[in-house]
Amino acid sequence: MKRIEPMKDTIELIKKRYSVRDFLPDPLPQEVIDDMIEAARLAPSAQNRQPWRYVIITEPEKIKELVKHTGLIGLSNYFIKDAPCLVIACAEAKKSVRLNQQDYYLVDVAISFHQMILAAWAHGVGSCWLAAFNEEKLAKYLNLPKSYRIVAMSPFGYPKDDKTLYSKALNVFSGSERRLRKEEIVVNSH
Ligand SMILES: Cc1cc2nc3c(=O)[nH]c(=O)nc-3n(C[C@H](O)[C@H](O)[C@H](O)COP(=O)(O)O)c2cc1C
Image (cartoon, rainbow, N blue to C red; front, side, top):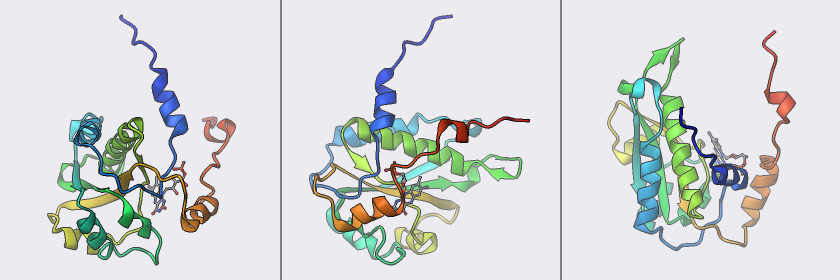
């Protein structure tokens, strides 16, 4: 069997990624957005159901307006208003596979969305997974079909060097650089 060539760049890409919460206003080139969509599209999914659906907003005024309808928790995640691109990752829940009492659309969309995030990062475009929003409010504002669930959203944009006090504080608060040790995540089965 033919061996697949090692792709060390991917490991580097994963190691260097971090959540970006301060963005330059520069718009994303269409080729970058196209690569992001392609990476999301090619993701694996349970029974290849591909339940992911993406709302992509690139008009700054629309993003600023949407932020008022996300039901953000306090001012957290307010930083998305300054990003030049916002993606809302949805699931067509009717397409989901249910196994072991688990709905796999969450897994499928998470894989696809993270592929999008890594493809963006490969172009130097930062992002930040967000779960702190009010799904009901946002789905209504976006007029999404009733069968859609909003799994996550993320701003996308080129990182700004000078971080706001808020994003510095958030990094400390969420202990962003902390990771469990190898021994803590690889467990014995008996
Ligand atoms: C499912 C999920 C939800 C998250 N929700 C938020 C959020 O609402 N607001 C936020 O600022 N960061 C959010 N984050 C980002 C995490 O805080 C961040 O990934 C973690 O602290 C590790 O930091 P790093 O991404 O810089 O490595 C979320 C991450 C994930 C995967």
